[in-house]
Image (cartoon, rainbow, N blue to C red; front, top):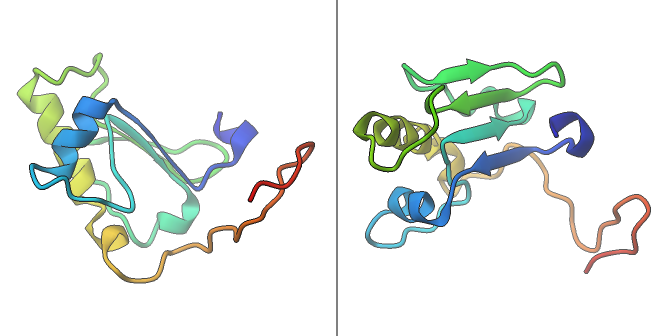
Amino acid sequence: MIAAWEPVWGTVGNMTLWKVLRGDAGERHRYTGGWMVYLGAAFDDHVAAPPGIVVRHPPQGGRLLIATEEPFSLADPEHMKAARAIQKSFAAINADDPLPWEPPAPPFSIPGREKIA
């Protein structure tokens, strides 16, 4: 999927996990983690992989941060600890500082599609 979509960032999780990672106050993050997160090369100098996290380097560049090699479970304290560590590693990119990449300004075009406003 990374090769086909060329994402800057992506996450795998579910609403329950994302609510936990946002905290009781419903904190809004620019980037919310999950049990697996892809960070494009633009993030290399901004996010350090937490200790104990599985890190993969796809051939297209960037990194996959994976909480566990096992099927992820919200009921497993070690899985949740790893997911929280991934979220905590996003502190710098969730700050009010400028993004480490320039998002496309709407309207932008997708090849083969009309412009999206």
